[in-house]
Length: 279
Image 1 (cartoon, one colour):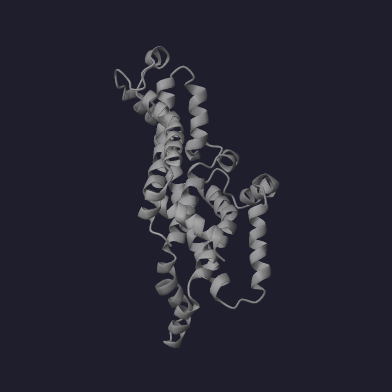
Image 2 (cartoon, rainbow, N blue to C red; image 1 turned 90 degrees about the horizontal axis):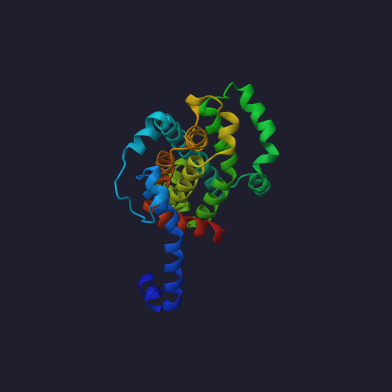
C-alpha cells in the first residue's frame, strides 16, 4: 500500500481544485450562521458583509439565559455522553463475542441484530413509547438514553464485530495458552487493537444522540428535560423577531458536534471505512 504522502502527490490537480471548491461551498452556510450570531437585525438584513461591523455578544447571553439554553445544553451533554458510554460498553463485548468466541447459533443471533438496523424508528415508535411509559421514564432523560441505546446497538455490534474479526486469532490463542481468561483477552489484547473502531462508534453515537429530534420530542415533554434540538424549535417560536439571538442559539447547538468531529475525523472515517469493508 502506497503511503498517504505519495498519494497526495499523485492526486489530479483538477480533482484537488474541485474538492476544494466543494468544501468551500459547504462551509459557507456554517460561516454565515456563525457570523450572523454576532449581528443585530439591522445588520443581518441591511449589510452584505459576512463579518459583522459590530460584534454583539449579547445574542449568546439572550440564547443562553432567556432561551434556557444552559438547561438544554446540560441535558444534551448528559444524554449524549451516557448514550455513548453505554453503547460502546454493550457493543464492544458483543462484537467480540460474535467474532472470536464459539457461541451456539451465533450466526442466527447476529443476523437478528442486523435486522434491527433495517427497522425504521417510525415502525416501532408506538410500542417503544408505551414501554418507556410503563417504566416511568417519560419526561426523564434516562428514558431517551435507553431508547437511543436500544436503537443504536445493532449498528454498534455490527461495526465492532467487523473489527474484531479482522484481528489475528493467534493473539487470543497465545493468551489462552498462557492462562488468560476470555475477559482478560478482551480487555488487555483485543480492546487496545480495536481502538479505531471504538472511537468511530463513540463519535457516531455521540453525534446521533446530540442531534436526536424525533425521540426527544416524543419522550421529553417538560421544559426542564428538553434537549437542544427541541429547545431550538421552542426558542424560534418565542423569538421570531430576534434573528441574532436565534443564530446564536444555532451556533451553540452546532459547535460541540463540529469540534468532536474535527478532532476525531480521521478515526471516525477510517473506523467506518474499515467496519464497512472487513468481515
